Every structure is written in C-alpha cells, then in structure tokens.
Length: 343
Ligand SMILES: NC(=O)c1ccc[n+]([C@@H]2O[C@H](COP(=O)([O-])OP(=O)(O)OC[C@H]3O[C@@H](n4cnc5c(N)ncnc54)[C@H](OP(=O)(O)O)[C@@H]3O)[C@@H](O)[C@H]2O)c1
Image (cartoon, rainbow, N blue to C red; front, side, top):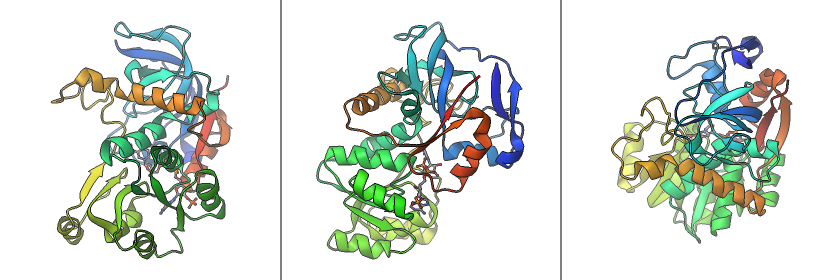
C-alpha cells in the first residue's frame, strides 16, 4: 500500500516521503480500515521531531482515522466489513497517513451520519477531553472549570463538554479570532488572553478570592506552573502534558492539598505496547478495554444531535502533510487540521 511516511526524525519539509510499504496485518482484535480521513495532532509533530521511545523507520504517523473496515481479526465483535468507523490508532504502531491502518476494534465506533472530515477530527482529542473532565476532574453541574487553550483541538471539545454538563468556564487564548471563538461560539464565561492578562489575578477575581477548584491544563510549561498560584485549596489540576514539579512547587501543592493528575488517552488502550493488550491489575478490565469505543460512541451521538460541534479549520490533502505539520507546529490552530487520504 501507499503511505506518506517519515524516513527519519527531523523537520517536516525534509522527512515526509510517499512510499510503498507492507499492508498492515491484523492482530486478533484489530480492524483493518481503508483510510478516508485522518487528522494532525501535536503528538505527530513530537514523534516526528524526537520520539520518547526508539522508533523504526519508515514510520507512519496519523493517530485519528475515519475509514471503512476491509478486514477484521479473529476476535473482533460488533463490526462488519464495509462499516464506516472512527478511532484513534495507537501511537505505538503505524498510523493512518496511509491507505490502510490497523486499529483495535475496542477503541472504535461507527461514524454514523458524520462527514468524513468531522469524524476524523474527534477521536484523539475527544477521548482526551472526555477522560480528563469526567474520569480525572469528575466535573459536575455548577462547577467552575479553568480549561486552558480553549480554541485548540482538545480545548474546544472540552469547553463544549463542560458547558453541556452545566459548568462555568474560564479559558485562555491569545489571537483575536480564538478569543472571539471561545467567547461567542463555545460560550466560555470568561476568556483570558494568556499573553496579556494576569491570569492568577483574573481567576481570583472571578472566583471571589476562592481560586479555581478544577483546572484542565492543555498547554503545560508556564501555563501549568502559574496555575499553582490560583488553584483553590483542595483543588484538582489535571494536565495532559508531561509536566514536572520542583520541590518548591511540590510544597505549594502539598500545603493546599491539591490533587495533581495526568491524563494520557493512550493508557487504557488495548494493543498499547506497554500492556501487551491487557490492563494489568484492574478489575473489570474487559469493560475498560471497550471504554474508549464507548466514549467515542457518546461523542458521535452528541455531534449527531447538535450538542457537540467539532471545528475543522482546514482540510489538507495527504500529499501536503509537511505543510499541515508546519502549521500545527506553529501552535496556533483553531479546532482541528484534517487530512484527506486520496489516491
Ligand atoms: N495526554 C494526552 O493524551 C494528550 C492528548 C491530546 C493532546 N495532548 C497535548 O495537549 C496539548 C494541546 O493539544 P491540542 O490538540 O489541543 O493542541 P492544539 O490544537 O495545537 O492547540 C492550539 C491552541 O493552543 C492555544 N495555545 C497555545 N499556547 C498556549 C498557552 N501557553 N496557553 C493557552 N493556550 C495556548 C492556541 O491559542 P492561540 O492561537 O489563541 O494562542 C491554539 O488555539 C498538546 O501539547 C498535545 O500534545 C495530550
């Protein structure tokens, strides 16, 4: 099959190459999906630049897919050849910048009535937003939630999910169009410009001096470290970035009884290379192995009934992946960049 692979780590303009590669072979739980659309995530750029685990080349990126099932493994249940499905292929195998991709059926669902582009915009960011808000932060109606980077792929779905739950939202952005998008389209209650505003002061004012009880950190770095100043006592910060705290910050967290949690949407995925397809030490493992498929199903239904509006800001042809990566790497995408895989 054809795949737009990377041949080494390096700048997007240098490492993408359209190649003939071996067709994916399904494990017992896999679907082989003919790719219609995929999307770009910052993770693609991270792996392209430097992988946290050694990778073999040529390597195919692309960790979202909407496509049609053409083959299935022995233990696949529920899906049939010809079904149009969506999912997030594990980043520990080859991805969807290719004619075909293998994906564990337990983290897939049907695309329903969604357009191919909309469908590919959902899986990775949607599961991340859902798990961070409902599994880690455990948001409830009436909560104030700070959701950073509100106009981004994760943020724009997170704001909508939290608003639908009845939460009040404080978010951050910098470009005029993303500030307006967060306020007018997503309905955030307060939108702060992270380049100009005193975020800690503003959050303390908005919360009448209590501080933010729930913070979803979608930006890391300074955004994360500043949040330690305005998280309320007994609050919870959930970060989706690999941030670390030093001893002084540890004291800040300790003295306020803060819960700090990390959200990685890859961790429960069967087929994940670290778990060998099983979830060690958990009860109800079979249920949890299907969980991401179930989450995706809920997200698709929300889109179908107009409760969730994924924003596709641009669609690229897969021959133009290098440009799409360069755009993503500049860090100012609104919603999602989708890629159409064509012959
Ligand atoms: N743990 C996981 O499972 C997981 C899953 C998905 C993503 N992630 C990570 O989470 C991050 C966000 O992902 P994404 O897909 O939402 O990225 P994205 O779509 O590229 O995010 C772009 C948005 O971030 C905003 N932004 C940039 N710097 C910011 C800052 N310092 N403070 C607040 N907002 C800022 C930009 O707003 P303006 O343009 O207005 O400045 C832009 O709208 C990435 O680092 C990604 O690798 C982790």
